[in-house]
Length: 61
Image (cartoon, rainbow, N blue to C red; front, side, top):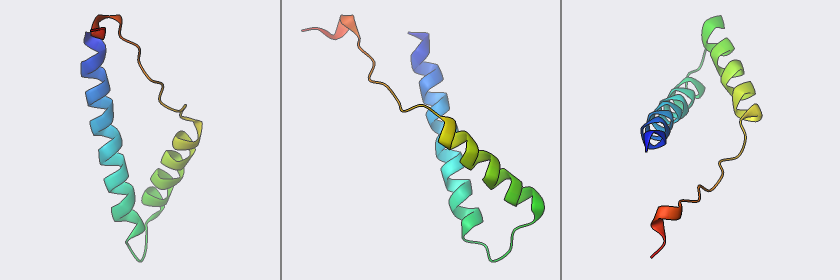
């Protein structure tokens, strides 16, 4: 199913965002662009819906 590729790509992007956030939060000083990125991603995270379980009919045993 095509959704699997999109889900894996999105998971990779979210992992990179999390790692970038951790690195930036570890710095003593952020430039304005870095501060804006952190603010933007925090806002996006707060608006992101919780992941839903996907029901797949073809997995029935």
